[in-house]
Image (cartoon, rainbow, N blue to C red; front, side, top):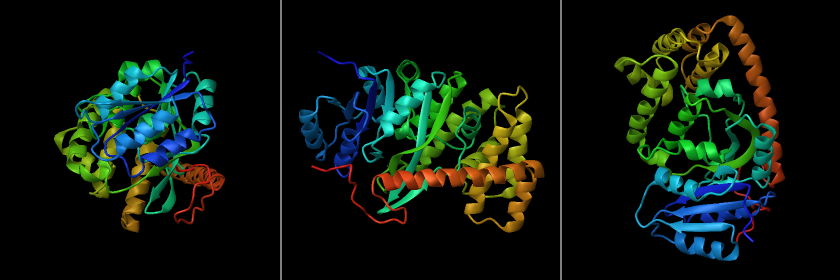
Length: 358
């Protein structure tokens, strides 16, 4: 008898032999068991096929499909969506790790919040054996995410879960091979779908030199500006060519930390929201996050104060207090999540007691 899974995890992999086994083991270690794992092998030429075949032969919930030609990520994910049978769709990448309770907590969240169409989660990063908190202290409500998408991508793609009928209807745009995730999130928002973040640390996101984000910066920039031109036009007003230039270099990728240009762009964004598509507090928060990134990049104290004053003293006092409170709460959750699988946040390569490699 075929049992319909409650969650369909979908993943595309190309030459993922380095971390693939650990990724699959983290799925097999889930406390939630009513899942299917649809894996698209996008013409790998390393040992990926062998690894996948071994796991699929031992667990019939793992379903491997091999592309005849290399389709790239968005088209492969659309193929996986068409094969998925679950009520919810969850994503996974071939180099990341699920915490053991990831699917259970995400399933419970979606069931308890039927008005949410897509949600992601908090995560730890792992690079060169060092673990750190990712997204600590950020807001996770619908209004904040809608505003944050103007200036960054706050949603961890391999950490999402979504209503199957919604994500299948919208699908991935095959023309975006570096920013297919952000493009889809903006369409969720523009189609009045509700997006939130579950403030639980449920993923370990691996950072390494083979990632798309490290190898295709120019293509990323071109795709980001296409996505954001549409998003700004629908929510605010179209950007001028001059604004586009500062946006891509001074807001999204933050190579140009010109505080005067930042203030000018921020004030324009506020004035451009003539139809009140965005919550005013959320819009202020989103741009304040970019100013915080400027601080991390080492802008002068005088420029930092100049930028902060553009937000107004009442907002600054309220937001600085709230940020500290959120960061403290997130930090505690992160440490507890790490300790639950035997990690120490001081770093170092440690064994994962729940993830037993073959």
